[in-house]
Amino acid sequence: MRTIFTISVFILLFSINAQEVKMKLMYGRVSDKHTRLGIDSVQITTNDTLYSTSTTENGSFEFNIPRKTRALYFNQDRYNAVKVRLSPPARRVDVSMKTLSYLTETYGPPTGKFMVGWLPLKLAWGALGVKLEGFLLKKHSLGVYFDWYFSGIQFFGGEKYTGYKIVPFYRYYIRRDAHLGFFVQASGIVGYFDFTKLNYFNHRQYPYEISKTYILKSYGFGVGGGVSFVMNQSKHKHIIFDIYIGYQNFPEDWPKKATNNIIPTTFSHNASWWYIGGPGSEIDIKLTIGGIF
Image 1: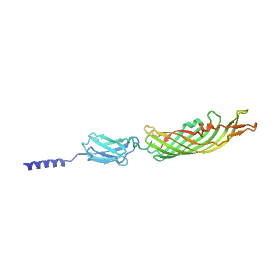
Image 2 (image 1 turned 180 degrees about the vertical axis):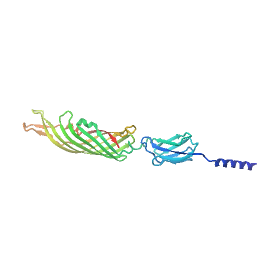
Image 3 (image 1 turned 45 degrees about the vertical axis):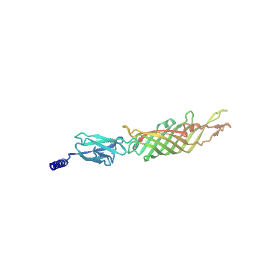
Image 4 (image 1 turned 60 degrees about the horizontal axis):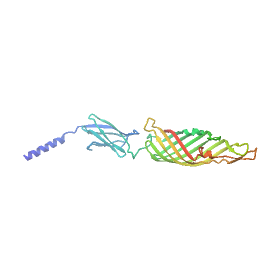
């Protein structure tokens, strides 16, 4: 009797194992939630991990699983894990994964290597300012600011000038992710200014003011830091705002004194405006609005 029972159990187990598991083909794509680019090497498994696969370089996958499978699990070291529930007829599954908060991915548009921008505040000083920046690596870039003073003015004064100022710079981004970047910057400065009206004053006798012309050529440097914002989470994903605040040493070298041929009086020039709000302002603030491509 014991032998018959043992044989019966063996036959039952064999018949169960011999039954063919009904399978279905699953396929789809896994992409980054922000950039929409495919993610490679994502491990995809069933609940019991008996069936698994991984995504290709463009994020696609394809493998067979039992028809009774009701969930798939997606795991990748740089992203939050995702669980997807399956309906019985499901064949295609497309998944978006979010980068781990402490391992944020690249900046803005993923293919962007160049930034072109405009400095609107420069118009208040009678200048047109533009910026070009090229990204060498994720956290390193080289660029240049160019200011063309087509009608340079002095606030609370009457200086008149034209000229240009070129500021090549190097940037290191302390943080740079899909939306936000913090950077430090070092720059050189070279400028050329043609003063058609450089004013000198005396307070003792008439005339109290005389004007001179002067060609200014100056060199200097700047250091500072700032922040950049990329509108990557909107339909305007190529728009970038860049704010830089720093110190610059860009001195003037025009004569501090002048004389008048009519009367033997010495006139003085006050250069404070140049260092407070002028092209040589020691506190350098640059707001850039542009695009990254």
